[in-house]
Image 1 (cartoon, helix red, strand yellow):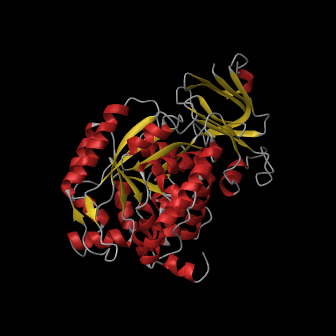
Image 2 (cartoon, rainbow, N blue to C red):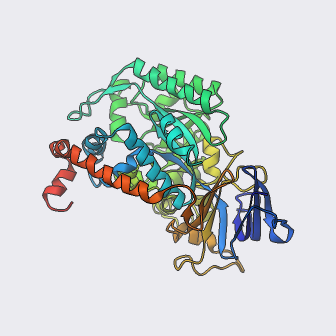
Image 3 (cartoon, rainbow, N blue to C red):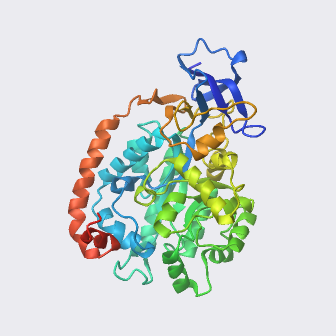
Length: 475
């Protein structure tokens, strides 16, 4: 046995309820779980590494961030509290235009550090030329990644007139599709990498090209992962191109694209009837509560999708939007937003909201046979949580467990003290084993200042709401 975790409260997400085991132990061998059960039956003393929870820890499957654009973490805080229509073109663009390839790597390194510290072990990375991030960050750091190549045909946006119909170029789209196909050739059998196709959005590619991408995904036993119904900008482009009564869901249905091969991110610009249609057609959904509420002023309909019988995961999107990559924060918001939306405090209770970042997230991404729960034979992606924190106390085990409620409603995400991915320790006793956290933080901080200084002239010319805040002395 390579690693043993002993004397811990285990939440397996298997069997009855959440499969809670009091005074439990786990064993890992060759990157997989070899034992999960009671301490009384656990032969662990010959393990190479023993982590003793002293009955003060909880052990969970590593969390799954099912939607993330990590390079933009280097631009955290540069845009906020502005109209949705300004966010991308006036708010972010001046800074994105200054980014270099190495900046994307830096942003991803910072994202991974933040994510690991708050319990994330799988990142569904959605990015152009995602292979660069896989090879320079995820594999060197031994981090599990669903590598989703962004595919689009859009070549031009007039930032002064973003409502104009976008121009498309098929050769640009074919280049990104080629990169996606190459991901499968290189990484399809990799233990840490799951390739996926990411047609960006319905307003950024043609229907015939989207159908071609879907067929490529099917041939590789994968899915198409797309931003769908994500607000006024997309809706405006769809109605201009396809007719005033057309919506994203109607367009997908009319083109036989609404089925089990589709993962839909966001979908906050849909009706309950459209969401019900998506559920009936076995479409999977991923919501990002912080980012969408902050950028669009809308709570993503995670609660409604689950209430309708749909399967959903959860993500943090990009840090200028969400402000963070802490999945415990997202889980809490998902539950609270659902309660507000339905004016019902029983909607999305802790045992359901925790599944969004564990077994349900794995099912959405099609990797539930590998991760998402603690079961013999699954990949050894595990986190331990120090429960002896003021905001998590008291710990009650009789006559019921209060740990689930405390993790969802009280956790800050900084209680994680051990993170193991594919059987390899990444964080031990709250310290990174190999990642040089301090140097990365310093490097990101210095480079971000340069980016902002270089973007300052274009930023001021944008006349965004952020510029107004600055002139008023608020930022």
